[in-house]
Amino acid sequence: MQTDPPAAVADFLDAAPVLDNAILPNCYADPADLGDLQIGFRVDVTGANLCDGESQWRSNWWVLGLNRRAEPFFIDADEPPDYPVYFAYRGSSRWQALPVADCLTDFGYLLERLQDLETDPRQAADWLEQRVDVDDEVWGDVWSWYNDDIDALERRPVVGIEARDYLFGQVVIRRLGQRPDQVLAVVGHLLDRQGPDLANLADQSEIVLRRDRFVNLRELIDHLTALGATVVFQPDD
Image 1 (tube, one colour):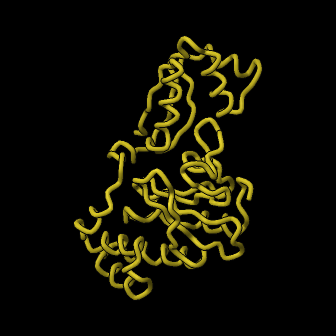
Image 2: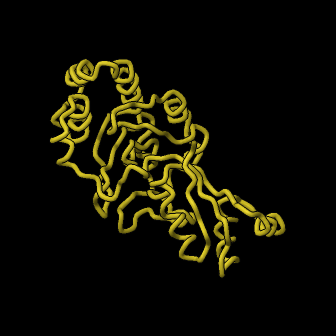
């Protein structure tokens, strides 16, 4: 699968609802290009491949959405046309795929129905209990959230996720620092700029690189800072 998704996946992303439940997706990949949401999973911020390495993220896994804890929902590209949906918790050095739905269409239906019911969390929990196994690891956490069962959720702590991580904003370079060529090389890769077009960026007072959740931008900020650049995260208003 290329970064442009097949029709079934694009259709799901085009209609996918954002849920209040912190375990379920609240942001999704672009229906026309899955690329940006793969950072931190398939690739790092420089575009280097992370698949089949120590984290055990597989080359056929593609992230479709993240929940409020920046945990991924993804499909296996080798499983068309149904595309079963999987989920992985943060907090471990290795990603473990947990089954969520047998097919993408079923997952979309569950999300749409839960969105309709979320004004009454207890009703959402009751409906969910009739349709999925709430003893399942993932759906059990979804069900616990609707039931306001904080004790159950705290048994699955999330490592390294803070309130700021949920914020949307943009990475801005204010100074290139002592290694401008290396910093510009990263900038050129991210913005697809080269030659004179890239050199012109060096004269700008600020270079805006990427907009995303802070949790997905930390690695990029740390990388550029290590190169000597002055980098800030500007949250959206």
